Length: 370
Image (cartoon, rainbow, N blue to C red; front, side, top):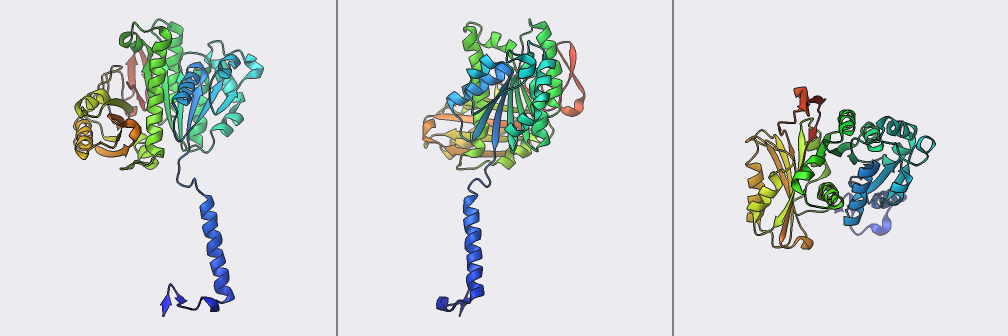
């Protein structure tokens, strides 16, 4: 009698060839066991310049599972105060560690001189988040270089950029030019407008107001990262996110969190965008991921997913996932990536130009998120 091509009760009579074959299998098994990270995406969060570094610092403090953080700056005093797993002070021969002086050309020169170092810092990433405040010198000049290098190495590149207040005339122009360079190398660019902070939280002290923006950036990045890297009851993997972000359509990333006993409010919190009016009616696809406590019912999960998907095109490709986490007892957190959206200030990549603040800005995968 044969089992698996081997005679039953004949282990003591194995030939040398059979023994060598088994040794080969054991070696292969051991080799496979060593590859414990196989299948896990490498996710990087790269903060460029002062504002980008601040976002990385906040992300480190709130904690994120599955992402590595990198801070790049030309200002030594600022980067020394930042928490990040890796840091790069670039352009020392140009700025002597004292910043780019608000000149994007200086920031870009520093980044080009440090290309090899930056490439080593970001190599191997499957997804690269770039956080940056546009309009200044370092971030505006460095972020497009980082995006180009990440793109050239095959990474999915998502930039989250803040733009200046309208009163900062010169910085506004620099921000527009920087965004145009940045978007060429990104799968998606999420633009957060500082002017909306004045309307949203006009009475907050200025430091706390900027913390609101940093908190939002951090939560969006953490939400996407943990959606990919933490095991879920209904799983969304890296390939799902990559497919959705790489369509070439205008995409937006939305985040909402409310009490678990009020799914309708969770839907409103996720879809209502105080920073921009977004039309979801023709949206072609959505990834929707829910995180809640053990009490999450299938009815509540369905109500949230159905409430969001009902706002999209009837033909939209909707994929949803869910994770049960005791830390979210009594709360539902929603993270959604929606593609094919429209806005009065936002056109799809194929639509040409959009008039933004009386000046044309070419867009590609640029979205504005709450």
